[in-house]
Amino acid sequence: MINNVMRTQNYSQSSIVQNQATIAHSATKELNKDKANSFADILALTNNAQAETPLAKPTNTPNPASTKEMLTGKGTQNIDLDSYFSNKPISAGFLSINDLPPILLPSAQNIKAITEHVSTRFTQLLADYNIPSAPEKITFDTAGKMQIPIDYPYTTELNQALEENTGVARELQTLNAISSHAAEIQDRMPFINEMADASSKSARDRIIAKYSHLLHDNHSYKSMALVFSKEGAVSVTADGKPLEFT
Image (cartoon, rainbow, N blue to C red; front, side):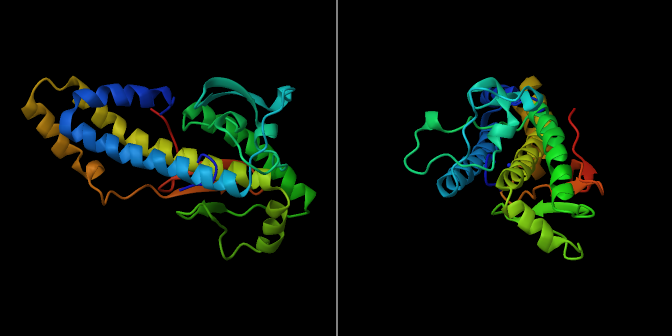
């Protein structure tokens, strides 16, 4: 699904989801299982990525221009995104959980901050490498590998630029990952809210039937894409539509 954080509006809603899930009985347990597996995938991919290329640890003197209030696995923190997505990895070797940067959660707040930040960096990247235009879009496969359209004429140059600027590549991967996870949570929020308000088993059964397409193991996930302006500004789409939060 992803490499760094990895697949809502505010991830604190995830806590609400968990509380409401205890009310929702068997169907809600199924939803929790699905979400838990998704988040476990994110954590697993994040750990794998960190093992291969340890992330740069945020500095003690953050850059005010790139410092944003972010929702993380360690609570709300001011994160210097330049440092968080630095090209320079920390030293290899054993890393405790306290040595790693906090995981960025899939909230609207985080997605907006990263979108703005990586748009600036990607635009500068194109200018630095004399790449005339950005690709129309970038997608990622289930292993988190970047997919550039085959008709993009500057694929070789862009790949080289991203190989030499791993922080930008990782930020794009992270944006895709948390946007994907946020989109799936968004889909499930009406189900959670209705189940929380249900006062009888028959009402819960009707809601389960209504949202059964979200609860099956073969549920199809949204097709995510990072869409670019010619200059390099980034936006996120899900199934071809701009990612929005209600």
